[in-house]
Amino acid sequence: MKRIAVFASGSGSNAENLIRYFLDGTKGASVVLVVCNRSDAGVISRAEALGVDTAVMPRADINDPSKMLPMLESHAVDAIVLAGFLLMVPPFIIERYPGQIINIHPSLLPKFGGKGMYGAHVHRAVVEAGENRTGITIHLVSEHYDEGAVMFQASTEVKPDDTPEDVERKVRQLELEHFPRAVRDIILTPTTHTHAADE
Ligand code: GAR
Image (cartoon, rainbow, N blue to C red):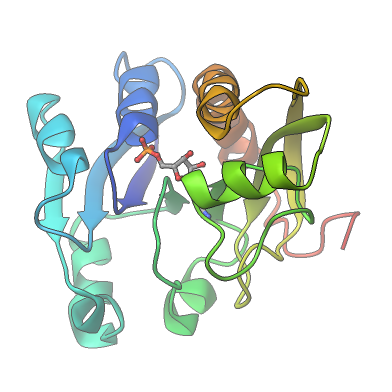
């Protein structure tokens, strides 16, 4: 069984969906830890309600190898999934988990990625740009925001009169439908993915 740590900063709907998907023990992996940088984030109570260990770690602790690595090692973590995690993953974590750190981004990267592009900001930018499609991108994490190898994308239509809230609803539907299975496929495939074909 692969052991997953989910890193999240917000409401945690994706974290909860991942926890539930792997909960029955038949999928070859399970979520064993949720790391969150904000003590008031909804993800903490969602994880606790499902019996998953949580660690609230401010940015300074996440960036400190002497705090972060023992936390991951004490839970024997094999892979890390970012589900609405708004901090950079420090290089020492990326080196420790090559090809085993996965992010979900709520647009069709490379469009609408980069610093400051998260959650509602992304959907607003999509509407303002007049895009007629958007979607989700599940990718490996490199030292640069939103730039690792793309492993999975799914798209949805943006209608001319859609609001950013309409777009967010459609994108969340795609996230709920695809994210856990894509995570499973990536972490259970026996390669490190450090040099995926689209790099
Ligand atoms: C999700 O839509 C996720 O794709 C996005 O944050 C939201 C978190 O929602 N991530 C990014 O924008 C990363 N750049 P949640 O806390 O309810 O899962």
